Structure formats: structure tokens, C-alpha cells
Length: 137
Image (cartoon, rainbow, N blue to C red; front, side):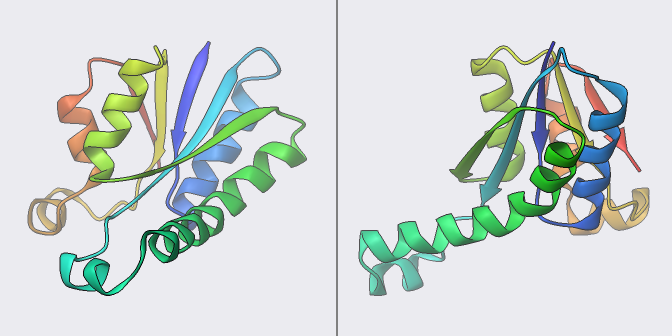
């Protein structure tokens, strides 16, 4: 089974990683992915490409740390990917392109009403994905 585990560095995404670690022993191919939001155009114009790349890499490493630690502690092997773009869209595209069997995501648990106003990556993935999505709360 190929599991895509999108993470944002929050305790919720680490909780999703722990869930995967305890429920899929050994046989799953796990890919951790962090999607960093692009810099605002004004800021990006002030920086060179190398600086922008270092910025996104630093954000990605920080976001992956907790989930990677949980999977490593449980003895799981996994891949890490760092992308830049709209998180919901990039997650769905990556899962489809890499033929993932399942997307596992942590939820912030804000509730339906707040999610309508604040937006939610989980809701976007749920609405756009043809691949099953497991939301861990």
C-alpha cells in the first residue's frame, strides 16, 4: 500500500504520522510531503532563486521533522518530498501522479463553520481527491 502523508509541522500532522506508524506495520510505502506556500510576489522579486530555495527547504525540513521522528521511532522507512504551491492542489496532484492508495492527514478540528471561513487544506483535498482520504483527529 502506498500512503501519502502530507504534513505541516503541527501536532496534528505528527498525530497522523503516529497513527500510520501504529496501524500499518512494515508493508506500507510511506511518503511524507510538505507543501510550502509560495512567497508573495513582492518578496520573491527582492530575493535571488537560491535564497528562495533555501527558505522553502528550511520550512520543509522544519515541517517534516515531527512526523519523520514518529515514523523513524516506530521503525518505518519513508520518503520525504518538499513542494511549493497551493497545498490542497499539490497534495492531490502528487497522490494521483504517484499512484497513492491512501492519503492520511491530520485535522486541526476547527469545525465546519470555521473551516468555511478560514479555508482548510483537508477540505480541499477531500473535495478534489479521487483517492481515499483518512482524516486523523
